[in-house]
Image: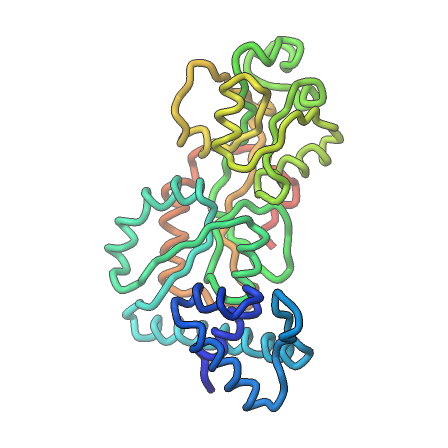
Length: 317
């Protein structure tokens, strides 16, 4: 049983291309072509339709891909269990995490983590949540650290910490009529239907959050500009182009600006929950649990008790 051959064919399925799979695996294209030809010879049937591009699995290919995914996940879990049993944690820990979140979390914990587990090779990937979830499901990453905006039954969610969401804008955008009565720093959410709103790209975590937030409170926001990148939202708000909803970590990482005002979204503050996300049936190693414990210890009390959004985020599973 050739596990590396399975990985090569899974990568072809992921990329839809033999050449792209070779680049991703840092091997030659002939090596990947040979692995595919060997598997097709072994099973006496084509695994991909060569007449289509991107390459699409045949029926036999779909069966191979699903079985290979399961076998590689079983092998990965077995490796973790054996390393734990040997009390000499090593191997790889492949983390999926958004760029802004990695800048918030990794510098705070990486030195201590490496002292605890010097033999673990910690690596991370970043990308849209939908793409990263598919990588988690396929076994390309071991765990994700993202905000929980849904309850996908393929995964289980372990809460790490809560984070407040703020409205940010230049000083002359928000007027007293847009604020809660008697407050100078709490924005009425309904005012987002009147104010110019800067929205994140729909496929991003922040874009998904904003859509769900507006749907939950039955608000039709006055979106005047949609952009990719949380830092771009901060910069455009600073330039006076509208109001953006941003998490605390993006605001902390951005250069302080005397032009910007921050507004809470309720008396206690509206927040979302940052979670570790695992495959539902995955074995969680000592090295993974230690990483989560470090993150909780560093960030769990950062923003206090918030009104969590969305409401179903209160239940981990």
